[in-house]
Image (cartoon, rainbow, N blue to C red; front, side, top):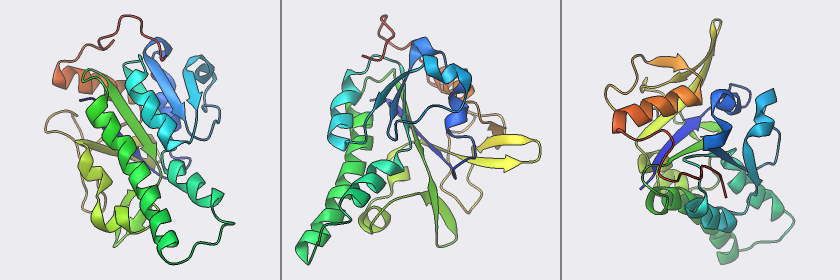
Length: 220
């Protein structure tokens, strides 16, 4: 069982930029939108471009990198929705379409949790939406909102916040979000938006070697 962490936030608040200090030799990115990372060193991180949930489920257990990032997770659902926008769905077909999108999103997280080696860390970067006064991971359709709480599938959920003194991750729930982290893992409620520092904290907390279990240390 891998350690899966969600990194949530609005566009432009530093989710992708938080990868800046990751060691390219230890990291790989499933790049859903096939876009460049927003820092010069990003070209050295191995990336696999796909928004196909079936391909992602096939890839996850095979990737050798101990740090795996799924960037722009919500577009797995969003792209699937847009690609079918010109089709005429009626009755059960329309209902089944949303069910399939929900299943595909759930299955990726479930695959990361159940089929990826336990010393690896999977980071799911996604946008947020507001629902009943709280921010949560952005989804499409009612099934994931009413029947499944995606954040409930993982132990850690961090969320971006921007202040005058910089960009940060929230580590503890403030009553208006779905943020959570294990007791004592992080020293404060706000930490710099540095995914490498987050990964260091996770490895130290659970006694995991930084380089994982595979000595080849490459994504595929």
